[in-house]
Structure formats: C-alpha cells, structure tokens
Length: 107
Image (cartoon, rainbow, N blue to C red; front, side, top):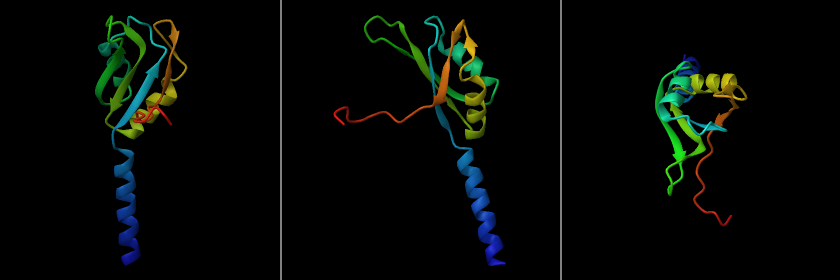
C-alpha cells in the first residue's frame, strides 16, 4: 500500500511540474510586430500570461525579438515545436525556451 501511495504522489508532482509557466524566446520578428500580435499568435496553443517585445531604449524601436510567458509547459512545448522555423509576417521566426538572464557578463 505504501509503495502505491508514493507512486501516486510522484505522478501528481510530475504533472504539477509539467504545468508550471514557461518563458519563451521569439526571434527574427518583423519590426512592426507588436505585443498584441505576438500574444494572438501564441494564444492558439494555450493561455498566454504575458508578451513583451524588446525595444531599443534610445529610439523605442523593436529589436526584432521578444518573449512570451505561457501558463503550461505542455502548451508552451507544443507552441515551440509547431512555430519554430515557420513564417510569420514574411520572416522565418525562431522560437525556443528562453534561457535565464546572465547576471555576470565577465564569465
């Protein structure tokens, strides 16, 4: 009985880990793509928590990349696999899981 209980808890724990939020990098975007466009593109795959287009701090123009946060890892992985390399606004976009920001640029 005890073994079964532990197995059940590990299944629940793993399911919970699969459903945590994922931050996604989206690159090679057309400079006219805005945060609403990006959110609309990803909402086809699941719930989007946030979208952010990175802009130049001096002129406010898009740098051609952004980030999406999705509520579920499963939905995010599906979006990544189906959108990476596809054409959006006449550009082949790059979509993958975002890496953590570097805190020390000397390394």
